[in-house]
Amino acid sequence: MGAVTATARTPKQDRSRATRQRLLEAAVACLAERGWAGSTVAVVAERAGVSRGAAQHHFPTREDLFTGAIEFVAEQWLAALREHAHALPREGVPRTHAVVGMVVELYTGPIFRAALHLWVAAANEEQLRPRVTALESRIGREAHRLAVEMLDADEAVTGVRETVQATLDMARGLGLANLLSDDSARRAGIVREWSAVLDGVLRRGI
Image (cartoon, rainbow, N blue to C red; front, side):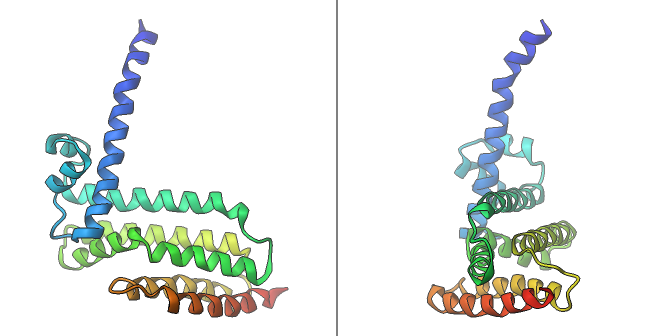
């Protein structure tokens, strides 16, 4: 009987996970397109094709939904980055350039656009600020750790840690520049030149 019950419960659990994922993906899309003010639980629920009650069952508050959405999509992106790491050039400037390009892609895509709206809202809403601050810190640490891993960087060497972090900060700045207009042409040149600078710093310990 126990086995039958567990088997019967599986489709319901699958539907619940699917509903949750649709809500998270819809929340990110709404934030990127409408900003915080235009992204309500009702709007997200409609976009996800579920009832508002179902949305609130998974995410009791608006803050739960949107911080969960950014975390979910960021984790997906970081996981995809790890999977693609094996296809990177083996060493030298080509590998460094590829890693910098992948990092910049994160900060010029819809994830960053959605996250930025959440960060701005957190600056004005006290109930949201602690959660967003903690989330941004966690994602930032993981992005830095992953960049170090993919670059095979030795942070014991003077200047390496700071330069890797500068890469992330630069990528964030390029993401901001890309919000109002397509900055891809200028960005490509910056990525190319910065990759050479970063590679020079990485080779100090060799």
